[in-house]
Length: 359
Ligand SMILES: Cc1ncc(COP(=O)(O)O)c(C=O)c1O
Image 1: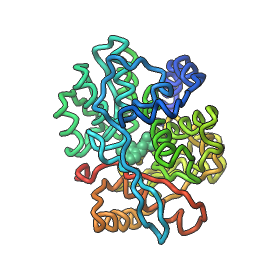
Image 2: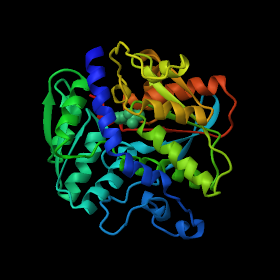
Image 3: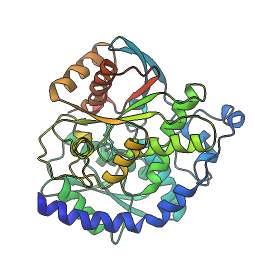
């Protein structure tokens, strides 16, 4: 485990550095929000045209986004749950995929690869199919058929890699030195999509920021996207405060929660136990330092949830008619814990993926 972490670290650094220029350019972008113009546009995430630095001609889109923000009573309090399970590929990852694959299309790239055992790969494969881009997905050899079947259905090629998730990341990063790396965690264009979650939440609340958002956290694509989105809204003067970001991890694989609580300067080498919240079971997230920094800057924190808590929340939601993936139930378990111990009034969370993803 230690050895694989070390190998990954140097490749992680290589890719973060490789994308650094692009990332800097995107970080310096000044998003604008012409509210009256936005209000009369189609109800999808591309309505924030002045907030996404990409030419919208030839975009690869299924008209995705503007998912309903549903009021729900949880732990005796009314909160708002964004219905992100309703995206075309079944999870919020379509936000990142539509922007990233649109960029790839504009660059004229015809072949991409990514590594993921789950929803990010499904989303990227779906948008690559629409764009007729050749897509290769690296997965650990023991990845469940539910997700690989969806990836294959879109026409993507699956490369099964021996070993664990870290070995797969390693193999993909080596191959990505030759093929375009449409990575949901390294490629900054993915975050240009996930940040629209924050834009939509604020618009749906009447261009107001919530007090807290409760989000799942593995590689942090939603945490970092949301942070970026709220910061851009605040810089543009649309909102007056950044909400607290509360990041949820499964207790069985919670390196970031540990890094945060022990004030460590790098990701600890943890023992990863199996969790039903497989989407957030990431032992070595490459953007760990950025994630911790974002959470701190919002005065947020991490909450860990046990397998029993995840199962209980999953059942509770299903009995109310919400069929979500176990990974999504982890967020709801964290939301329940948060609401029991905190007084924030306007709280937003999400169902991050559909229950048909469970196997
Ligand atoms: C359903 C679901 N929710 C949440 C997440 C967490 O996203 P991230 O790993 O980017 O933090 C994932 C990741 O794959 C997921 O599949």
